[in-house]
Length: 181
Length: 181
Image (cartoon, rainbow over all chains, first blue to last red; front, side, top):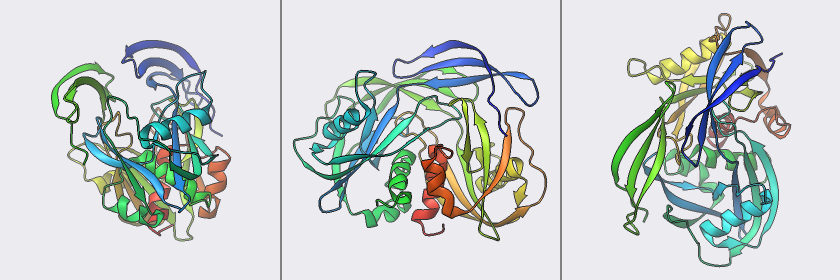
């Protein structure tokens, strides 16, 4: 039985706007010893696995500032906050990044992106039957190329290193493990 | 064609020991506009999908300070640095967290855990035919329970929320997409 570690204190130590860091005092329920851990806080993420009526994945190739390289990814982004329904946020990110929409959205699952370090969640959706409704509207900080991909290509694109974002592999895996892909 | 954004400058702005943050000045190759981005740096991660000779997954249930809850995960941890071969580090983490070892290790893939924000990589291995060699030796900051799981249970454990670490789903997905699981 793994018991929770009580959080005795939490102090803000860094704020980057997009994310912030706290130093939290915790106590092991097994040994009684106290220790400090750092926790990174940001809003929840939303991702969508979009499939056209022809069964093609709608993906985006984009440059990533953390890795310093481009990768082939599932569309997604940040939840806009308490005023936005999760499903609406997922559809908004899909439309902004790809211009696709109009499909039927279903919930694939909620995970922790990096539970050792981050306190947020990622909610992942499937969108069946999407079609191109408009041009993509990327943010100023994004360069995005829309790519249609046959799902049978997934393993090869991962193996080649082109699809190297773990969160994209996770989203595709939820659809695969659930039998929808 | 998605071109790289030149990194014009990088300033350290926070150091938590386990990870650090830089504020980097970049320039869009599309618009020419400059902007600041924050990048989180830490050592690479190593994960192993361990299978016993009977084909059971060797997993760990552990408490996570970011999410504030326990989850059922693939063993893994931090690369010890330049002096350690990646394969040796993966086997070390497997032994420390589970007490299992002795199998045949093969490379499943290298991904970016969170390329929008983080500069590091995760290397994922498969270990076939592992067996219990010793007791687990968790770090002081870890409470770990070893769990053997039939791979046919993966989808149900994800759906129940028990297996909610996206990195674990990613590691299992690499094995599944590659046809090894």
